[in-house]
Length: 356
Image (cartoon, rainbow, N blue to C red; front, side, top):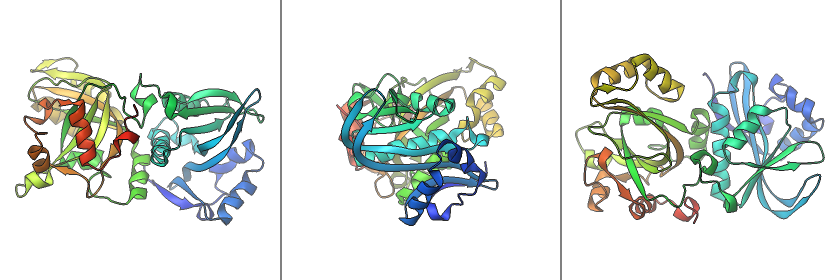
């Protein structure tokens, strides 16, 4: 997939691109609205490739009544996803998930209670995406659009996608996923070295927020679906390893598949490669090498809740000094309060991640 997401000013994006034809058809006032946004210097998160615009996300904060056909919700501060649209060639891929993930991060960051979107019923893929991420349908507005809303006060913790970007508050334990730097920086390219938040958001949108890693633990792991994990980057060099290996990010486990257990196969190589899919950062040759060279192989699927960011990662020495790295990484079993302590050490506002 050539191309990338970037925050761009409206005026720097060509409204004559055929991507915008469907928006012009759905909303006759779209050109006028676009011109107004251009004139006041507003920005959009946009994906462009050699064919032109591939995806478009616009967010706005508002404080006005939410009017439906049969009811009116009182005015309050809300984030509105003013526009989220994907080109036909990118539907079903990770761009929509990534763009919506960034929208939800922005919502979380601004500590606004609600985020909502309006969408016509014909856009079934978008509606499925909003449903997957815990948006609830409120009804229809006067122009015939469905209104979908997500509220901090009514988070569905039954599924890590529905609760994203928040972590369920009733978890009892957490783990640590160790990833060598070569693979870590492919899977989480934005969490280790970059301090520019806009750049992190651009990369997140392009890579999606579902992360698939292939683990090769010494023994069976204790992770459970729905539990949070710390992502730990293993520095490959020999000098300064205890200061350069560090916790960088945190995720929630969404799926676990045991591929091999003590050399006993649960699936063959072809099924393993197929299951790893296009969300993993491993090449087919790397997958074959992993499959053939390890006694224990597990597919770990995670949703990417957040990152510590440059200058906030927690190195091995600090974890060790705080009794937070006392055994082999895959065997680390954090209590809830220990996981929270790691978030705090990474300068994360825990009350804005775990809502009690």
